[in-house]
Image (cartoon, rainbow, N blue to C red):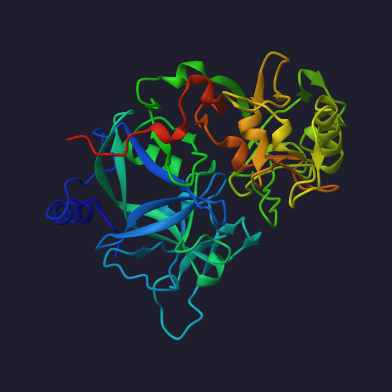
Length: 436
């Protein structure tokens, strides 16, 4: 049976009897929404929690910045009275831009396996695995609102599009996590769906905490203030670049990548430009090369020749600092006793990712470049990506921590702050206590 406007109104009326909020597709009451995000100490993944299903169940999910969809394990314990599969040719399938349809291969249809359903290809970037049979579905989703500096009420979305997957795709995720939240550039990723439903701008801000004890935040829509500080006024902007080809674990060459690429033109270490093969910094006709931002890897990864020149320049600037043995996955390590400290971390050379002009650059200070691996050892937190990786530079999670990033999908721009430690604040300073 088609889900008509009459059914939508009836459904909202039922929800209102058990919830403080029910939103419609043209709701203008909510200006911004938030997710609290905490770093998992074991996997170094960034974890959030979203309410889903009827009755509502809190679901732990890993953040996948470039992910195409919110996907959930539907094989193990998914129960909901409001779950609906998206049938082939439906509006939901059109929005998801999928043309693959099929029938359930089991003896009888069930949640996550229905006849005449449409499918997409969700990815688990942590085990580099794609699943081609992800079924498109709809269900209730609950997420918290905000005025930009204080959290508000939770709102319910009665028809949120997501993907069902088998349990095996959750391998490698943090303990208790049931799927991933895709924040990528396509229409069924979380930012675009929320913007469409609530009629707010297609943009979101990410502020990941460096602490495993405190939460960072993702804000969808307008409003990015930390307590008493509007860091957004100091953002530097650079264009987001569209990679014309998919760049997941198994790239699909018939669709643009949903991931976030920026145009790094050169790299400076302590203000001095290092010599790099410029072809590696561009994206070639196969979609290889370039620079992307990813929460799918804990530390930044550099193509081998780029890694070699950056680390050599870094070591040369620290000629009076004591080197120690490498500690995997890092190759360049020092005695912490021979390195001083500053407001923005260890006193080491800055690393600049130079963007559209020499005056526009993302500066990485010691807090984001050096990793404390033991009481006496710190290592340069960049990993050698080898020869001919798909992407030449991947800016990983550690380098994003305590930096405010604003992804504006409508304008195709990235705003970035560099380290918030300069502002004497961190990404853990947002108040998650609901305002009375």
